[in-house]
Every structure is written in structure tokens, then in C-alpha cells.
Length: 296
Image (cartoon, rainbow, N blue to C red; front, side):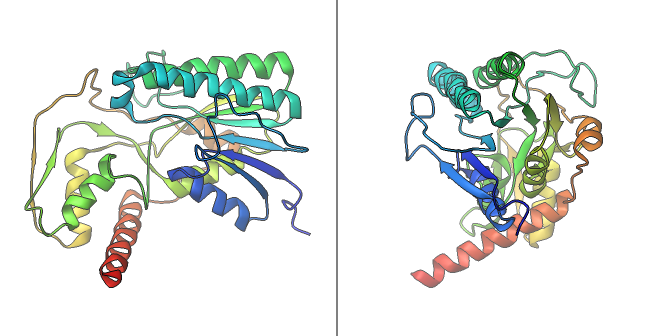
């Protein structure tokens, strides 16, 4: 019998970018998976009812940073109250939680950014995630169940929404109607982690016995311009690109995180190089585009 076959995992946000891929991976590895997403109900008010749960992975949240400036209340309701609802379920079921937070450090005072770096959330989205972290820590300590918090950098991979940077650039690169790739700014550098590596870390968090917080990323940064050049090079496409020179509010120019703690304590490390990750994204996008053409 598969060692995982009796372990029942609830994944919130199971229909999202990370959730879908995580659910598929868990099922492949023999876990019993319960799924929850926004089609079922609002995570902040839904009444969960299970006989048995061994672990919850809480992915459900509002995530797009620019939108959090337009409607902060919705972000706090979903990301804080929703997390409290999940923590209450953990308390009742006596199960462990893996909570997916965000980058909460603001402009780095030093690089790489470790877990002891001063906290300074740069948007209502990041602040809502930090508030949820505080509640996680309180529930874990007070009601004695394990919580693992991941503070991820920019997760990317196949089938990601084109509102995000890498799929947006890929979409422009592969679209014959687009003559020049447009971005807001070429300069910002970010730490990007391929989705499958992140999912491996989530699964490795199962069985943790205490409260812990881990930065999760690749450990190096790439600029927007480097991303464009990589995508054009790997796709064999020759296009110009230009920036609109629009700086985002509270822009941070370079970020990459220290991943030594997660490497040491979860025996995890990223296995997908940035070039390989982009190749996989391009392959999936080309496959989807070809399939769409065949359907017409």
C-alpha cells in the first residue's frame, strides 16, 4: 500500500495556478485530496465539514498586487479572515497547515534577504498576508498544531495568467501581430522560482512538527530585460522591446532571497534552472496555441 494513500490533504485554491498543479502532483503520489476553490464558496465564510484531515495547504487568496491598492478591504477579508477560518478548521480537526504567504520585507536592507530581515510590507496585499501570518503563529502556539509558512518570491510556470510578467512577455513574443514587446520598466530584478520546485517544497512540509517560516525562491535575481532576452533567444524570435518607463508605487529594484534555511530544514532545493523553466513555459504555450489553431 502506498505510504500516502491514507493521508487526506485539503487544498484551498485548488483551481488556481499553483493549486491545480499541486492537486495533480498529490494525486499522482497517492494522497487523498479534498479540493476547495471559489466556485464552492468564499473561504472567509464557508462552513467546512470533514471527518478526517491530515494536512491543509492554504493557497486560496487574492493575489494581484496592483488590485490591492484599488480594493484593500477585499484583500483583508479574503486573506486574513479566510485564513482564520482555515486555522479554526485545523484546530477542530487537529491537523497541520501549510500557509502560502508572500514577500513581506519591502525594499531590502541587504541581500540576499533572509527570514530575519526587517518586515516592511509594500502593499495592502503583502500586509494582509503578514497579518494572516501573525494569526497562524498564534493559533499554532495556543492550540498546539504545526504550521509551516512559505514566503515565496515570484512563482512562474506553464498556464499562468498573462496578467503576470513572464507569461505576458511570452504572449507578446509569440504573437505575430505584436511587433515590439512592451513592458513598464526594464530595470527591476526579481527572484523567480519554477512552479514544480515550489510544489516539491510544499509536499516536503508535510510532517513538520512545529511552527516555522521559510523564504522560498531560486536564490538569485534576473531583470525584466534579461527575461525578455531569454524568452526571445530560446524561442528563436527576433523582436524589439521597449519600456514605458512607468515606475510602480513603492518599487523595489532588486530582490533575491536566502534559501539556506529551507534547504537545511526541509532538505529541499530548486532543481529547475531559469532557462529550463522558460523552455517549459514556451513549450506549453506553443502547444496551447497549436491546439487552438487546430480547433478553428
